[in-house]
Length: 136
View 1: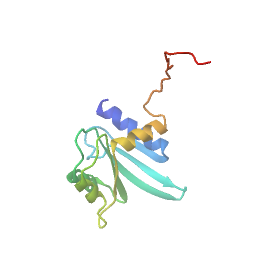
View 2: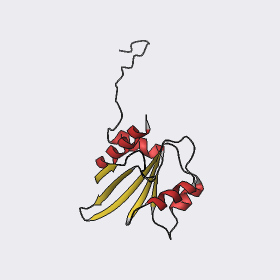
View 3: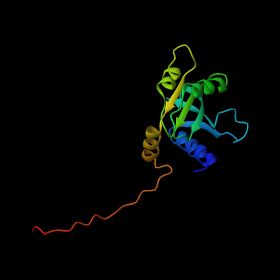
View 4: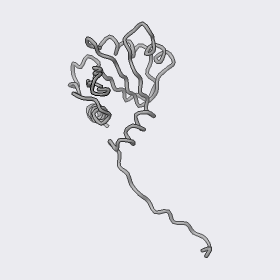
C-alpha cells in the first residue's frame, strides 16, 4: 500500500473511532505529522491529536518519539502508529512523565482495530469439506 493510501486508511480508522475534524496532511511539508484529528470524550473533552504513521519492518526507536513530540502544535498530543512495534527506549520516551504525551499503537493493535471496524479488510467465507466415514 502506498504511503498516501496508508495515511488515508489511518484517517478513516480514527474517524470511525470517534475522532472529529480528521485531516490527512499533504505528503510534502507535513512536518512529520501525517494525520490530525480531535478525540472527543463524552461530548465534553476535546483532545487535539497529531499522528505519525510508520510502515516500517523495524521497531520504532526513541528518537522518532522525540521527533513527533517536537512536531506537535500547541495543545496537541501525539500518536505514533506503526506496522511493526516499539523499542523499549521508545516506550520509555513516550511514557516520560515530564513531557507531552505521545501514545503508541503497534501493528497488532492496528490490525485488531481495522478488523473490528471493518476498515481496509475483505471478509471471505469458505466451506470446510471433510472426508471420512459418515457416522449416522
